[in-house]
Each structure stands twice: as structure tokens, then as C-alpha cells.
Amino acid sequence: MITAGCDIGSLTTKVVLLNNTKVLGYAVARSHYDPVVGVTEVMDKVLKSTGIDRKDIGYCVGTGYGRERIPFANKVTSEISCHVKGAKWLMPSLRTIIDVGGQDCKAMHLDVQGNIEKFCTNDKCAAGTGRFLEVMAKLIGVELEELGKLAAEARDPIQLAATCTAWSQAEVICKLNLKVPKADIAAGINNAMAARVAILAKAAGIEKDVCMTGGVAKNVGVLKALEEQLDVPMRRLRVDPQIVGALGAAVIAKENLGGK
Amino acid sequence: MIVAGCDVGSLSAKAVIMKNGDIVASHVIYARPEPEESAQAVMEKALEKVGLTLKDIGYCVGTGYGREAIPFAKSTESEIVCHGKGAKWCMPSVYMTIDIGGQDAKAIRMDNDGNITRYAYNDRCASGTGRFIEVMAAAMDVPLEKMGELSAESKNPISLSNQCVVFAETEIISLVNAGKPLPDIVHGLHNALASRVGAMARSIDIQKDVTMTGGVAKNPGMVAALEEAIGVKFVKSKIDPQIMGALGAALLAGERMRKSA
Image (cartoon, rainbow over the protein chains, first blue to last red):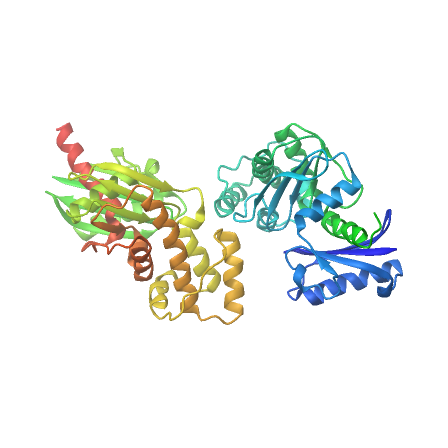
């Protein structure tokens, strides 16, 4: 029995195909301005790569900011429940899940049963969301994906004084003009990002095991800075952290089919 | 007695020269990369207007974000004190001034002598400062000076769903692309900033008369939006509201010179 999960985020669209116990395939693409076109393209890509026919999908759950626009979704649900579901499916011992997406950040603290005990979110301020990293990466002229690697070469990370993304931009321009090595700037950016996320995570309450999901979790620099600031290890998941929401949607789809 | 005040802000630098208690010259320039350079350039221009040189200035007080870099300033003072002083001197009925700067916003209450009694200040979040309008104007490719004019043509101001400068910038670009009339967007932007600055002003309780100082006070769209947001008509300054900080600094220079004499 095959189920699908689609997660249309502000920046990327993710589709996961799940077969009871195993991820059959997934794809991630930059979100299309028309979510219907975007999600259909990503779905077709996964179907093609796995050789599965659309008809074989027993149930599809949609989530994310564009969830209402998925033509083939049987049901839609919130990102929060999808991230929890996906992360718990991968690692049942998790008690804290920090999801940092393209334009928001959520921290979910779970009880022993896996129900959400406390939940904190920021989608008002770009600082502490993927957008902060995106703006900064563009400013220093590196790909978003390179920020983590670049930061690993830092010798003397810069310290950003401001929280606000707009002010940080001015600060980073100033550092670039002073010929501060990009690696040091990148490390400072990751640290600032982690500091914002840490505040939110602490507000939700940190309990081991802790993991990070969402695209930003691919940035090792942020992950390590967050480990330091929260003083807990971040458990690494066995799948791309960016697809956890879509995976959770596929797991919920499976439950809807009665395949618990 | 000739004294001067110099206000080096993030976007502009201002100088005021006073002789025996009257303003004899003032000047405003766009800020240069180095605050020291801005200070020197603006003061030179102001001095030129009245045929004076730096040597003729008995005392100069520096203020603004670049105040520590003004080579000819004998002492410095915060913008908050200077704006309060300047506004009270120009408009004796005023007990509160709101100043939206390029990278901060302040609401200041003062007593009969222009001394500060309460103030509120934001330089943390760019969306409550002049930077908000600056970024949005750039995104729409509208000169900052045109914002007021455009705003006045609005029939149906938009309501922004984002507060953050970064998120709002994206929203503005989509609104422009969706064909929303520019005046309606501009008016909506003014309302958005006004609601944030207004909330800050209310946090120290509004005390009439109220005025607006700083460069943003020259934008009639912003003035109208802020008046509506706090429900008070502003007293308008006869003197350029942008030089209020430098004027306050010059007034303090006079006081300090008398004290040291």
C-alpha cells in the first residue's frame, strides 16, 4: 500500500512516497508561483524516479503553506502535526522537534505519548527563519547550501550586534567592506541564526531527544551552533531533514487508510 | 556669542549655527560613508552661508549616531535630549515630539523647560523606523521624496499582512506585480509604520501638544498617517523639522558655553 505526502512550503515543495515501512522516493523543488503546477511537477518527478503509477497511491495528505492548492490531496493537515508525525516515525525517542523553514520557525515539545505539550512559533520576524540565511547568503555571494561548509573554515567568527535582518544586512556589508574573510562572516551568520532559534526552542522547553527538521537543518553550522547554545546533541535523522513534513503527511495518509 | 549644533545621523547630517540666541544658518546634507567627513562637510556649508569659519564658533555640541566622530564638537548629547530641546524652543506649546529617524524612532515627552520627562525608543526592529519606508520605496523604485505626494492620491489604502521589513518587501513586490495602484500601496505602508510608531508613542502616554521632528516629518503622508494612528493633530514646526536635533544641540552649546564662562 503506497501513500503520498506533499508539503508546499514558502520556498520549496516536497513530495514523499511511502510504502508501509519504507520511503520509496522523494523530491524537493523550489516552490512554483502556482502551487498546483509546482506540486504536480514534483509529484510527477517522484513517480517517474520510482516507476510508480499515480493510480497506485492509496491516499495523499497535503500540508504546508500551500496545502489547500494540492489537486490530488485526499486530506490536508497542519505542518506541525506532520513534522511531529514524520520525526517520531523516524525516531520514536524524540521529545523536542525544532523545525526551521523558509519563512518561519517552530519548536514543538512533546509529552511521553508524543502529543504536543508546548508549541512556540515565529513567523513575524525574518530573523531566526530560513529567510535570514537566504538574505545573508545572497549578500555575501554564496549559495544557501554553502553557508554551513564555508563556516567550517572560520577562524574568528564575527559577532552580529543586531537581531533584525535589515540591520544585520548593513553590518555584514560593513564587514565585507573591511575585507573580513567570508568564512568568518558565514560562521557569524549561522551563530546569529542559531541564537534566535535557541530562544524559541527554550521557550517551548528542551527535552532529549532533540532534532531539527526543515531545510535549515541541512546547514551543519547552524546545527552545531544550536547544539552548543542549547547544550544538547541534535539527533541526526536518517532522511533529508527537509522532507520530514512531507514524510509525516505520508505517514498520516497511511493511518487514514487504516494501516496503523 | 556664536554656537553650533551638529547632528550626524545614519542618512543625513545637519548643522545649525546660532548667534545671540537666534538661528543664523543651517544646512542638511546626505551622510557620507565616514561620519567625520559628514560632520565637516555640513558644518563647512553652514558656515559658508554666513561667512564664518570654525574658529568663530565658541562652542559646538554633537549629536546623532555619529556624534563621537565630530572633530570640532566640545561635548556630545543624545538625540533624545536634543530633539526635546529643539522642539520646545520652536514650539513652546509642545510637550511631546515623535521623531522617526533612518534607523530608529523615538517618542519624547518634555517639561516646560524642554527637559525630558519620559521617552520610548526603538532601534531593534527596522520595521518601526524610517528604514521601513526607505526599503519599500527602493523596492517600488519610488524616490523617498515622492512618497508623500503619492500617498495623497490613494483612494483605497492596502493593508499589509507582514510587519517584518524583509517579509513586507516581498509582499510589496507581489502587490506591485499584481497591479495594485502605487498610491494605495504607499498609503498602506505609511499606515503600517504609523501603527507601530503610534503604539510606541502611546506606551509613554500621549501628552498634547504633539509635534513630529526629524526628516520623516517632511513626508505629509507619514504625518497624516501618524496623526490618525494616535488620534491627535500635530503642531507643525515653522523651522525645518529635520534640523531639530542639530538645533537642540546648538541650544545646549549655548547653555554649556555660558556655564563654562
